[in-house]
Length: 138
Length: 138
DNA sequence: TTCGTTGCAAAGGATTTGCAGCGTA
DNA sequence: TACGCTGCAAATCCTTTGCAACGAA
Image (cartoon, rainbow over all chains, first blue to last red; front, side, top):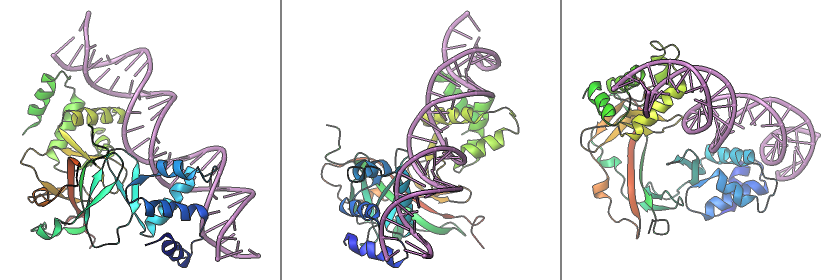
Protein backbone atom coordinates (compact mmCIF):
# COMPACT_ATOMS: atom_id res chain seq x y z
CA UNK A 1 0.00 0.00 0.00
CA UNK A 2 1.54 3.30 -0.98
CA UNK A 3 1.37 6.78 0.31
CA UNK A 4 -0.74 8.07 -2.58
CA UNK A 5 -3.54 5.68 -1.74
CA UNK A 6 -3.77 7.11 1.77
CA UNK A 7 -3.33 10.63 0.51
CA UNK A 8 -6.19 10.43 -1.96
CA UNK A 9 -8.35 8.74 0.65
CA UNK A 10 -7.75 11.75 2.88
CA UNK A 11 -8.63 14.07 0.03
CA UNK A 12 -11.86 12.18 -0.51
CA UNK A 13 -12.72 12.67 3.12
CA UNK A 14 -12.40 16.43 2.87
CA UNK A 15 -8.87 16.96 4.13
CA UNK A 16 -6.29 19.04 2.30
CA UNK A 17 -3.12 17.31 1.27
CA UNK A 18 -0.07 19.16 2.40
CA UNK A 19 3.53 18.19 1.94
CA UNK A 20 3.94 17.77 5.67
CA UNK A 21 0.97 15.49 5.96
CA UNK A 22 2.06 13.42 3.00
CA UNK A 23 5.56 13.09 4.43
CA UNK A 24 4.30 12.04 7.83
CA UNK A 25 2.24 9.32 6.19
CA UNK A 26 5.16 8.37 3.99
CA UNK A 27 7.48 8.05 6.97
CA UNK A 28 4.99 5.92 8.88
CA UNK A 29 4.40 3.71 5.83
CA UNK A 30 8.07 3.12 5.22
CA UNK A 31 8.80 2.40 8.89
CA UNK A 32 6.80 -0.55 10.06
CA UNK A 33 7.19 0.22 13.73
CA UNK A 34 6.06 2.42 16.60
CA UNK A 35 7.11 6.01 16.23
CA UNK A 36 6.66 8.95 18.58
CA UNK A 37 5.97 12.62 17.88
CA UNK A 38 9.53 13.53 18.83
CA UNK A 39 11.09 11.18 16.33
CA UNK A 40 8.76 12.44 13.63
CA UNK A 41 9.57 16.06 14.15
CA UNK A 42 13.31 15.37 14.33
CA UNK A 43 13.09 13.66 10.99
CA UNK A 44 10.73 16.10 9.28
CA UNK A 45 12.60 19.19 10.40
CA UNK A 46 15.37 18.22 8.00
CA UNK A 47 12.97 19.11 5.25
CA UNK A 48 10.64 21.56 6.99
CA UNK A 49 12.81 23.67 9.21
CA UNK A 50 9.88 25.53 10.75
CA UNK A 51 7.64 22.52 11.33
CA UNK A 52 6.00 22.77 14.72
CA UNK A 53 5.27 20.02 17.18
CA UNK A 54 1.64 21.13 17.22
CA UNK A 55 1.34 20.34 13.55
CA UNK A 56 2.78 16.91 14.11
CA UNK A 57 0.30 16.28 16.91
CA UNK A 58 -2.59 17.60 14.87
CA UNK A 59 -1.68 15.39 11.94
CA UNK A 60 -1.22 12.36 14.14
CA UNK A 61 -4.65 13.02 15.61
CA UNK A 62 -6.16 13.26 12.14
CA UNK A 63 -4.56 10.04 10.95
CA UNK A 64 -5.61 8.32 14.14
CA UNK A 65 -9.19 9.57 13.82
CA UNK A 66 -9.25 8.31 10.25
CA UNK A 67 -7.99 4.90 11.32
CA UNK A 68 -4.81 5.09 9.32
CA UNK A 69 -2.49 4.81 12.29
CA UNK A 70 -2.76 3.08 15.66
CA UNK A 71 -1.72 4.56 18.98
CA UNK A 72 -0.13 2.67 21.82
CA UNK A 73 1.84 3.42 24.94
CA UNK A 74 4.66 1.39 26.36
CA UNK A 75 7.17 2.12 29.08
CA UNK A 76 7.50 5.84 28.65
CA UNK A 77 4.73 8.39 28.74
CA UNK A 78 5.03 9.31 25.10
CA UNK A 79 2.35 7.94 22.79
CA UNK A 80 3.70 5.91 19.90
CA UNK A 81 2.03 5.35 16.55
CA UNK A 82 2.37 2.87 13.76
CA UNK A 83 0.64 2.49 10.44
CA UNK A 84 -2.50 0.43 10.91
CA UNK A 85 -2.05 -3.17 9.96
CA UNK A 86 -4.00 -4.09 6.85
CA UNK A 87 -3.49 -7.82 7.01
CA UNK A 88 -5.74 -10.05 9.04
CA UNK A 89 -5.99 -9.54 12.76
CA UNK A 90 -2.82 -10.25 14.67
CA UNK A 91 -0.56 -9.06 17.47
CA UNK A 92 3.06 -8.03 17.78
CA UNK A 93 6.37 -8.53 19.37
CA UNK A 94 7.34 -4.95 20.14
CA UNK A 95 10.89 -3.78 20.73
CA UNK A 96 11.07 -1.35 23.63
CA UNK A 97 14.24 0.05 22.17
CA UNK A 98 13.41 1.01 18.61
CA UNK A 99 9.69 0.26 18.43
CA UNK A 100 10.07 -2.28 15.65
CA UNK A 101 7.45 -4.98 15.50
CA UNK A 102 7.15 -8.55 14.38
CA UNK A 103 3.84 -10.21 13.74
CA UNK A 104 2.45 -12.78 16.13
CA UNK A 105 -0.02 -14.98 14.31
CA UNK A 106 -1.77 -16.42 17.30
CA UNK A 107 -4.53 -14.45 18.94
CA UNK A 108 -5.61 -15.42 22.44
CA UNK A 109 -9.20 -14.34 21.97
CA UNK A 110 -10.62 -17.52 20.44
CA UNK A 111 -9.41 -19.47 23.48
CA UNK A 112 -10.71 -16.96 25.90
CA UNK A 113 -13.41 -19.10 27.47
CA UNK A 114 -16.16 -17.46 29.43
CA UNK A 115 -16.66 -13.75 29.44
CA UNK A 116 -17.91 -12.38 32.77
CA UNK A 117 -21.65 -12.00 33.01
CA UNK A 118 -22.79 -8.81 31.34
CA UNK A 119 -19.31 -7.80 30.24
CA UNK A 120 -19.21 -6.09 26.83
CA UNK A 121 -15.86 -6.64 25.13
CA UNK A 122 -14.71 -3.55 23.30
CA UNK A 123 -11.14 -4.44 22.42
CA UNK A 124 -8.20 -6.48 23.55
CA UNK A 125 -4.48 -6.03 23.53
CA UNK A 126 -1.75 -8.59 23.48
CA UNK A 127 1.82 -7.46 23.07
CA UNK A 128 5.03 -9.27 23.77
CA UNK A 129 7.51 -6.64 24.81
CA UNK A 130 11.27 -6.91 24.82
CA UNK A 131 14.33 -6.03 22.79
CA UNK A 132 15.01 -6.97 19.20
CA UNK A 133 18.32 -8.41 18.06
CA UNK A 134 19.73 -4.96 17.32
CA UNK A 135 18.58 -3.44 20.59
CA UNK A 136 19.30 -6.35 22.94
CA UNK A 137 21.87 -5.56 25.61
CA UNK A 138 25.02 -7.51 24.77
CA UNK B 1 -3.95 -10.72 52.65
CA UNK B 2 -4.51 -7.80 54.93
CA UNK B 3 -3.20 -4.32 55.17
CA UNK B 4 -1.07 -5.00 58.22
CA UNK B 5 0.95 -7.60 56.35
CA UNK B 6 1.88 -5.04 53.74
CA UNK B 7 2.43 -2.36 56.32
CA UNK B 8 4.86 -4.41 58.35
CA UNK B 9 6.63 -5.48 55.18
CA UNK B 10 7.14 -1.80 54.39
CA UNK B 11 8.44 -1.20 57.89
CA UNK B 12 10.91 -4.07 57.47
CA UNK B 13 12.17 -2.44 54.32
CA UNK B 14 12.98 0.81 56.07
CA UNK B 15 9.89 2.85 55.34
CA UNK B 16 7.90 4.73 57.95
CA UNK B 17 4.29 3.78 58.35
CA UNK B 18 2.03 6.79 58.21
CA UNK B 19 -1.73 6.86 58.39
CA UNK B 20 -1.92 8.11 54.84
CA UNK B 21 0.24 5.35 53.49
CA UNK B 22 -1.67 2.72 55.42
CA UNK B 23 -4.97 4.08 54.15
CA UNK B 24 -3.81 4.12 50.54
CA UNK B 25 -2.80 0.50 50.85
CA UNK B 26 -6.02 -0.32 52.61
CA UNK B 27 -8.08 1.30 49.88
CA UNK B 28 -6.19 -0.54 47.15
CA UNK B 29 -6.51 -3.82 49.00
CA UNK B 30 -10.23 -3.48 49.50
CA UNK B 31 -10.84 -2.43 45.90
CA UNK B 32 -9.70 -5.13 43.55
CA UNK B 33 -9.55 -2.87 40.51
CA UNK B 34 -7.58 -0.17 38.71
CA UNK B 35 -7.57 3.11 40.58
CA UNK B 36 -6.08 6.45 39.61
CA UNK B 37 -4.40 9.14 41.69
CA UNK B 38 -7.43 11.38 41.36
CA UNK B 39 -9.82 8.81 42.77
CA UNK B 40 -7.45 8.13 45.63
CA UNK B 41 -7.12 11.72 46.67
CA UNK B 42 -10.85 12.34 46.38
CA UNK B 43 -11.42 9.46 48.74
CA UNK B 44 -8.59 10.17 51.16
CA UNK B 45 -9.37 13.87 51.49
CA UNK B 46 -12.49 12.91 53.40
CA UNK B 47 -10.18 11.85 56.18
CA UNK B 48 -7.07 13.96 55.48
CA UNK B 49 -8.34 17.35 54.40
CA UNK B 50 -4.85 18.65 53.65
CA UNK B 51 -3.58 15.61 51.77
CA UNK B 52 -1.68 16.68 48.69
CA UNK B 53 -1.61 15.05 45.30
CA UNK B 54 2.18 14.91 45.53
CA UNK B 55 1.94 12.69 48.54
CA UNK B 56 -0.41 10.38 46.71
CA UNK B 57 1.99 10.17 43.79
CA UNK B 58 4.96 9.62 46.05
CA UNK B 59 3.21 6.83 47.87
CA UNK B 60 2.07 5.22 44.65
CA UNK B 61 5.65 5.33 43.44
CA UNK B 62 6.86 3.71 46.63
CA UNK B 63 4.28 0.95 46.48
CA UNK B 64 5.04 0.38 42.81
CA UNK B 65 8.78 0.24 43.45
CA UNK B 66 8.17 -2.29 46.19
CA UNK B 67 6.04 -4.40 43.88
CA UNK B 68 2.90 -4.07 45.96
CA UNK B 69 0.87 -2.42 43.23
CA UNK B 70 0.89 -2.65 39.45
CA UNK B 71 0.63 0.26 37.07
CA UNK B 72 -1.22 0.26 33.77
CA UNK B 73 -2.63 2.76 31.30
CA UNK B 74 -5.81 2.39 29.35
CA UNK B 75 -7.77 4.87 27.26
CA UNK B 76 -7.02 8.02 29.21
CA UNK B 77 -3.62 9.39 30.01
CA UNK B 78 -3.91 8.86 33.73
CA UNK B 79 -1.93 5.95 35.12
CA UNK B 80 -4.04 3.44 37.02
CA UNK B 81 -2.91 1.12 39.78
CA UNK B 82 -4.20 -2.05 41.35
CA UNK B 83 -2.93 -4.20 44.13
CA UNK B 84 -0.52 -6.76 42.73
CA UNK B 85 -2.07 -10.12 42.14
CA UNK B 86 -0.72 -12.75 44.51
CA UNK B 87 -2.21 -15.77 42.81
CA UNK B 88 -0.49 -17.51 39.92
CA UNK B 89 0.14 -15.64 36.70
CA UNK B 90 -2.95 -14.57 34.85
CA UNK B 91 -4.56 -11.75 32.91
CA UNK B 92 -7.70 -9.67 33.26
CA UNK B 93 -10.90 -8.47 31.80
CA UNK B 94 -10.72 -4.77 32.60
CA UNK B 95 -13.71 -2.46 32.71
CA UNK B 96 -12.95 0.85 31.05
CA UNK B 97 -15.69 2.44 33.13
CA UNK B 98 -14.86 1.58 36.72
CA UNK B 99 -11.56 -0.24 36.37
CA UNK B 100 -12.87 -3.44 37.90
CA UNK B 101 -11.16 -6.63 36.82
CA UNK B 102 -12.00 -10.27 36.37
CA UNK B 103 -9.38 -12.94 36.11
CA UNK B 104 -8.62 -14.64 32.80
CA UNK B 105 -7.03 -17.98 33.45
CA UNK B 106 -5.58 -18.55 30.01
CA UNK B 107 -2.25 -17.00 29.15
CA UNK B 108 -1.29 -16.75 25.49
CA UNK B 109 2.43 -17.06 26.12
CA UNK B 110 2.74 -20.87 26.16
CA UNK B 111 1.20 -20.98 22.66
CA UNK B 112 3.34 -18.20 21.36
CA UNK B 113 5.37 -20.23 18.91
CA UNK B 114 8.58 -18.85 17.56
CA UNK B 115 10.17 -15.76 19.01
CA UNK B 116 11.95 -13.59 16.42
CA UNK B 117 15.65 -14.28 16.07
CA UNK B 118 17.57 -12.50 18.80
CA UNK B 119 14.48 -11.04 20.45
CA UNK B 120 14.70 -10.91 24.24
CA UNK B 121 11.27 -11.12 25.83
CA UNK B 122 10.96 -8.82 28.82
CA UNK B 123 7.26 -8.88 29.53
CA UNK B 124 3.92 -9.33 27.90
CA UNK B 125 0.50 -7.86 28.36
CA UNK B 126 -2.85 -9.28 27.54
CA UNK B 127 -5.96 -7.41 28.58
CA UNK B 128 -9.52 -7.74 27.41
CA UNK B 129 -11.04 -4.30 27.66
CA UNK B 130 -14.70 -3.41 27.74
CA UNK B 131 -17.51 -2.57 30.12
CA UNK B 132 -18.68 -4.62 33.05
CA UNK B 133 -22.35 -5.35 33.70
CA UNK B 134 -22.73 -2.25 35.85
CA UNK B 135 -20.95 0.06 33.42
CA UNK B 136 -22.31 -1.32 30.15
CA UNK B 137 -24.38 1.16 28.18
CA UNK B 138 -27.99 0.01 28.30
C1' DT C 1 17.47 12.48 67.67
C1' DT C 2 17.36 10.63 63.06
C1' DC C 3 15.77 10.28 58.83
C1' DG C 4 11.72 9.27 56.16
C1' DT C 5 7.34 11.89 54.95
C1' DT C 6 4.56 15.76 53.74
C1' DG C 7 2.68 20.28 51.83
C1' DC C 8 3.72 24.10 49.11
C1' DA C 9 5.47 26.13 45.21
C1' DA C 10 7.49 25.37 41.08
C1' DA C 11 9.17 22.78 37.34
C1' DG C 12 8.62 19.24 33.66
C1' DG C 13 7.02 16.63 29.80
C1' DA C 14 3.41 15.49 26.66
C1' DT C 15 -0.44 17.16 24.34
C1' DT C 16 -4.14 20.54 23.22
C1' DT C 17 -6.22 25.01 21.93
C1' DG C 18 -7.09 30.13 20.43
C1' DC C 19 -5.96 32.97 16.93
C1' DA C 20 -4.45 35.11 12.86
C1' DG C 21 -2.02 34.32 8.63
C1' DC C 22 -1.03 30.93 4.94
C1' DG C 23 -1.89 27.47 1.35
C1' DT C 24 -4.66 23.85 -1.10
C1' DA C 25 -8.40 22.90 -4.08
C1' DT D 1 -12.46 32.52 -2.87
C1' DA D 2 -13.31 29.21 0.93
C1' DC D 3 -11.97 26.70 4.30
C1' DG D 4 -8.59 23.54 6.04
C1' DC D 5 -3.69 23.81 7.79
C1' DT D 6 0.11 25.92 10.25
C1' DG D 7 3.10 28.44 13.63
C1' DC D 8 3.17 30.95 17.73
C1' DA D 9 1.96 31.63 22.26
C1' DA D 10 -0.37 29.99 25.93
C1' DA D 11 -2.94 26.75 28.42
C1' DT D 12 -3.95 21.90 30.27
C1' DC D 13 -3.23 17.63 32.25
C1' DC D 14 -0.50 14.47 34.68
C1' DT D 15 3.56 13.77 37.27
C1' DT D 16 7.97 14.98 39.48
C1' DT D 17 11.18 17.70 42.34
C1' DG D 18 13.40 21.25 45.75
C1' DC D 19 12.94 22.71 50.17
C1' DA D 20 11.84 23.40 54.85
C1' DA D 21 8.76 21.81 58.45
C1' DC D 22 6.77 17.70 60.46
C1' DG D 23 6.42 13.11 62.48
C1' DA D 24 7.46 7.98 63.20
C1' DA D 25 10.65 4.94 65.48
